[in-house]
Image 1 (cartoon, helix red, strand yellow):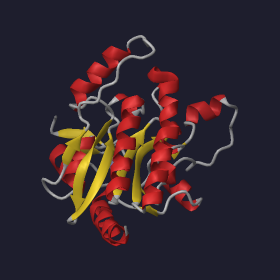
Image 2: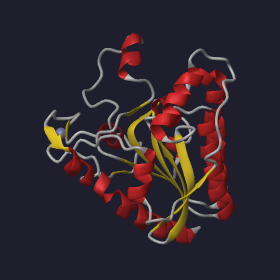
Image 3: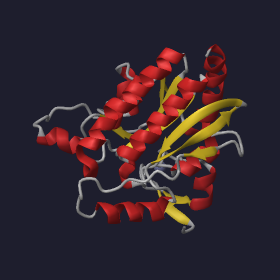
Image 4: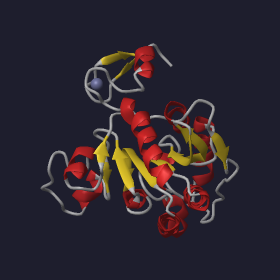
Amino acid sequence: MSAFLQCAGCKKILFAAEFEQNLRVCQYCGHHHRLPARDRILLTFDPDSFVEMDAELRSGNPLQFPDYQEKREAAEAKTGSFDSIVSGYAALGGVRVVTAVSDFAFMGGSMGSVAGEKITRTLERAAEERIPAVIFTTSGGARMQEGLLSLMQMAKTTAAVQRCNEAGAPYICVFTDPTMAGVLASYASVADVILAEPKALIGLAGARVSKQAGVSKIPDDFQTTEFVFNHGLIDRIVPRKELRNTLVSLVRMLGNAA
Ligand SMILES: [Zn+2]
């Protein structure tokens, strides 16, 4: 990585080392840049507590979609994972939790059959052991290259949330930039507690699709964390540097109740 980079929000030049130390948040405008899943895990959970599960799950190319295999292989090389979700057990302030973290660098964090299966297993482990599930989203939605098999994951993951509810296992979801479409419209928005990072893009259809559908008059802050917070979709906006402490308090409160 070079010593300098440009903020995606205010376009000011930032020192890379300082930027990393600041958890990839711009010191001038507060823009939260995307984090790789494995970095997110390191800065969220108790040191050395993360034990990865289901890392071997890897998608085939069920529809023989052109270029899918090549795209996936490039994403694997970039992220060191076989799909867009990294999941496993971890601890937060000493409380055992299960977690799944989405990685935007893997095909836009899209949900195909592997991501859906990993989310489902994460929620089922929470239900079985009656421990909190903490899930971080960043995704453009369902993965086009797996067609209906991707859409099926919406129903499957949502049903797994229901099993958590029945078992009394708390489920916390943290929306990060962007949380869209098939992910927002399934397991993400039915969490018990929903937190979101500031100014993340959150919505069902992106600006381009909305425009194509003939929607012309939309508010400036439409599909931002702040807009959906004001309209009651999320419980709290939490800056990245406060996220770990907020999650620790939540699992200590909710984890004991399970
Ligand atoms: Zn900035």
